[in-house]
Amino acid sequence: MAKEGRSAFFYGTLMAPQVLHRVCHGNTNPDNPIFQTHNLQMRPAILRNHRRHRVRGADYPAIMPSRGATVRGTYVTGLTDGDIWRLDIFEGSEYRRDKVKARILTQAGNEAGKGNVEGEEVEAETYIWCSDLLGLDEREWDFAEFQREKMRFWVGSEGEGEYAEVDEAVATAEGDGTGGRGANGHISNALEEQQKKDEVLKNAV
Image 1 (cartoon, rainbow, N blue to C red):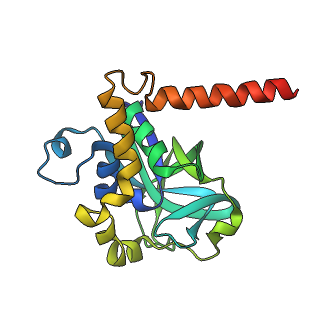
Image 2: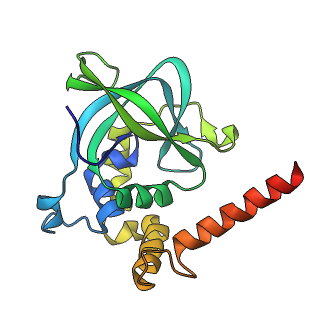
């Protein structure tokens, strides 16, 4: 069955609805009407042949392809192009957005996978680590531990710093009246930078 909007598989801090809403909508207050009117739907899912690592010195994880490994996460539908734009900024240059195939869990067991009942296979976008492998810890990142010990640093006034780049990009896009495509807009600057890189590569051949 076709889904409206874009879909993604999240496996870290974005599994928390408060964090996802803060990135996409700029607000985590449950009384905000957007919580009642948004089209996002979240379901438990797994991604095979990938492994989740802790990122050294950070509260968030990263995944890398790894044969035989499985990552438990959340399958989210109803994302808009604008949501993906904000998510790209939030994830930063250490991640690349790839298309993957995940499986919906019709029954979610424990983190070790015991009790899982798998349903349909779905296509989704997810963020894969593309930076220095030395930045990854071999240990598994734990969502329950994040919720228990770190979540308070990501929501409310204490967590505002985590979203500064997203907020700044959104403010620039709205402020220039062109959705970021004006002379000094975020999108225009990114396109100009890419054109320069392409020109350098072309001249080097």
